[in-house]
Amino acid sequence: MDIVVCVKRVPLTEEVDLVIDEQKKGIKKDQLAFILNDWDNYAIEEAIILKEKYGGTVVAITVGNEDDEEVLRRSLAMGADRAIRVEVSDISRFDSLGISKILSCVVKDLPCDLVFTGVLADDDNCGIVGIMMAENLNMNHANMVTAIEIEDGKARVTSELEGGLGEISLIDLPALITIQTGINEPRYVSILGIRKAAKKELKIMNLADLGISDEELSPKTIIEEVYLPPETEGAQMLTGDPDKIASDFIEILTKKGVME
Image (tube, rainbow, N blue to C red; front, top):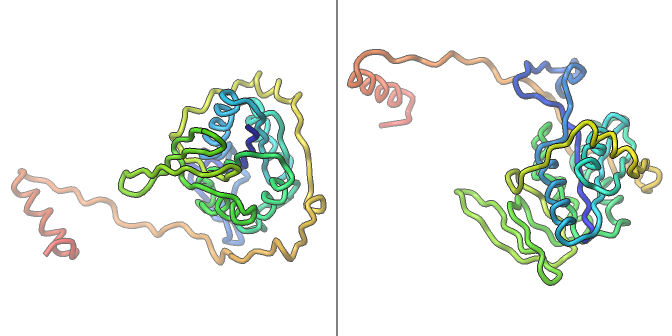
């Protein structure tokens, strides 16, 4: 069971005051900590669980600069066997389509029964790279998967639907699957484990190696402006006895058009 997992290094933005950069195309990241994208963390863990059950190898791939090797080292420490980084000095110059093309060019030359991506990326909330890769690679695919079982050259997967529903599908391998959080419990990785992982293979490739031209990677989606949501008034506190509060609450909803 050979599995390829695409991972991404993203800024940690929780409980941080975000500042828009001078170009108004993104946020300032120089003072932010970076981590492995949460969905990708679950994807790596699921790949390792399947490797431990069925044997095979796990290869982690990322697109970025030398700093982005941090998430590959973490993936190796979790149990991945090899890692590949496609050298790109500024990943922000590519849109999701460009990233999917780069990753697809790497994956197509690797032996794989399964390709995993996270459902989303924490930094841009675009959940389309995995599905675009499946199209590029002409692979069967399943999205937002919360459970995987392998049987007779097929994958039985449970996908999360709206309204708390789930859908079970049986898809032929090879296949690409986007992994939802909660599918497993990612293992803890120690600093010592990351140091030991430095002995595992980490290959560096560039766009020339993949034979992709700048024209092919030119963005089809352009961010015109990033801005913080406007500040609004604080919450209105209702006081008095329960009957008065209930009456005032209904009156407010009626004025706002929520109730008639």
